[in-house]
Amino acid sequence: MKLPQDKNFACTTGLIEDLGLNTVCQSAKCPNTFECFGKKVATFLIMGKNCTRDCAFCNIHPGSLEPLDETEPDRVAEAAQRLGLKHVVITSVTRDDLEDGGAAHFSATIRAVRQRLPDCTIEVLIPDFQGDEDALRLVLDAGPDVLNHNVETVPDLYATIRPQADYRQSLTLLERAKRIAPAIPTKSGLMLGLGETDSQVLQVIDDLVAIACDIVTIGQYMRPSRHHPEVTRYVDPRAFDELAAAGTARGIKHMFCAPLVRSSYGAERFV
Image (cartoon, rainbow, N blue to C red):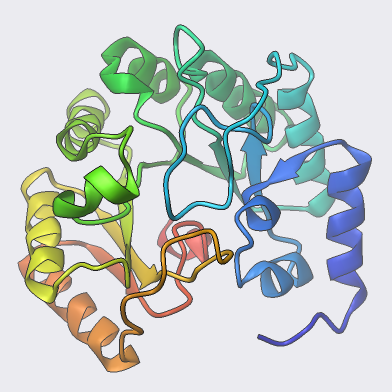
């Protein structure tokens, strides 16, 4: 990765710090942070820095949870406006401690950005809300332009990689989103290098095709620290091209597959 060479990186970092916001770019140690911040692009992480879950692949750890900050939606909107964003991505830590999983806070943030930037497109990367359909409806009613929820890995690895999540529950969320708001594209993603096989990955793609998922991202898992699971394989870039072709042939409208692809990376290209 190339280090930042212009003032935009410092400008973006300074603005985020000035407004007291979090980004998944920094919290998850995303390898694309330098590039995205240099382009004045960031994925906002709302509802605190700590999570109620402890997924093995993730650099965001559980810890003391903060009460929701009612000013956060407006601060995200201000940051988006000051950065001059045309596409805003909003995600969150998982907040199983909240009755609605934070759905109302997502809704408020979407509406705040829309009020300040009516021509800006908005993508939300949401948790599973523990299967709560009313919480999902609350987010969809706010009118995001893309609804993203990642399956992250193949179902056989959930017990070790996502022990507090449920693969079928994630598929059900995406299926419900398409049924409730068919005009809003759905999106999901997963990582390679956690111990999956190629045939298992193709089965996940088939599962996403079956629920009419519109966009699928696939990238290489990279170990955030020595405390995280080891990388089981580094996938040849040509294999990512083959997966993209396979997904398109099966019926996925947009496949974005490459080693450094992350669910929010280059998100604006699909809107």
